[in-house]
Amino acid sequence: MMRMYLDKPFVEWTTEEREKYLMEQYKAMLEAEKRLNAFITLRSVEEIEKEFHVASGPLKGLLLPVKDNISTKGILTTCASKMLSNYKPPYNAHVVDVLLRVGAVVVGKTNMDEFAMGNTGETSFYGPTRNPWDIDRVPGGSSSGSAVAVAWRGLMALGSDTGGSIRQPAGYTGILGLKPTYGMVSRYGLVSYAESLEQIGPLARYSRDLAMLYYYLTEPDERDITMANGVERKMMREKLMRIAMDEVDRQRAMEDTIIAYPSRLVDEADESIQNKFYDALEFLRELGCYIEDVDADFLRASLAAYYIIAMVEASSNLARYDGSNYGYRIDAYTYWDMVGRSRIDGFGEEVKRRIIMGGFASSKGYEGRYYIRSLKVRRWIKNNLLNILSRYRFLALPTSPVMPPKLGEVAGPEGYVQDIYTVIPNLTGHPAISIPIGFVEGLPLGIQFIGRYYDEPGLILLARVLEGKLYDPNNVPGGD
Image (cartoon, rainbow, N blue to C red; front, top):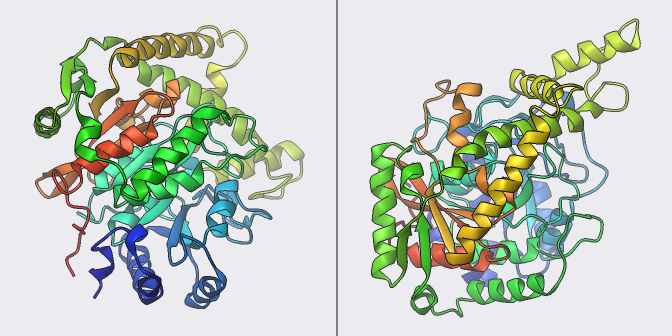
């Protein structure tokens, strides 16, 4: 019974099945909370049932885990930090309002790296999230809880992606994770870490569900000045709905598609990951895709540029948490003593590290040496990637260079190298997806495709083509 509701995408569920499997979904979320620390806040059965019975729309019956840096009215939104441990927003994020209007119910707020700063799911004030395939290993971050909630008998979830925070945990847990084109999803209600890099995005078990959820996430919002509006949005949404309704010829859609991959950069990954990566490309070649090796060594500069830009933006965005307006506070005799003590005790080590480094890199006398130079490198990387994607539809890379590390194995800066592949589209604003491609020694791994601007439908079609061929979306950890 526990697995019956995973036998097909949510978009195929009947009205009767949506009511029948409501509590099965809730039981799965409860297990994910208890076994894997996937949730910071899990709502009660009474609240869930009450909202389900008044809900209406195409997503009625979906219990949706939401990352804890996305605002939910009246529900704790802590960013996994002591600093916001008592914060209940007075409003919903735009994406939450949209999904509530079409029938979804927020089941709870998922665990994450504190303020989305981390790639393992270990920096949370509420303790680390565990990988459902091996509880002694990390699930990736920062959207760790959202990915685990889907992998552990879930269907869909919301995360955010600043440098791989959706794609890396998706790869480590064996599910789909999409980083949108910058400006396609409203950031209104997302607690800012690095606003020029981050986007809210979907995680899902099935490609058709991913298309459906993303369709609703792309509803325009005039409150977000970074949103891109125009004909591209309308055309993209039409394509997404066709994929969700399974009205696309998958085989024909991939014929003659040209996919590039940078072999010298792929060589940075573990050998077992390289083998699975090339197996996936060979499968696509057999389907009629053209696969070509390209020189993309310029991408090696991405990691350093990303971390400088992200840390500078983080030091600015987190300056608001001073204990005087809202957030954690330690009373003291002077204002400056109160601010200092509140921030020292309220933030975790990784957050403080990034604030300090960001403040240094943008300080007078050093901004030209670090921050401004990083912005120039970012533009250089973007121009070069645009050149590649003008000749090829997708650029393929591993999602991560290593298999999921053990808990505590790569804490702090030594783990930054795990982001070598995923930070690229965040710097350039391109969409990207992580798709499962199998297992190595019982642990899942993913392949990442970076697409042209607004070609999320093409990325999701890739997942649709590989679904059931290189991975089984009904394969869940933990048995029955």
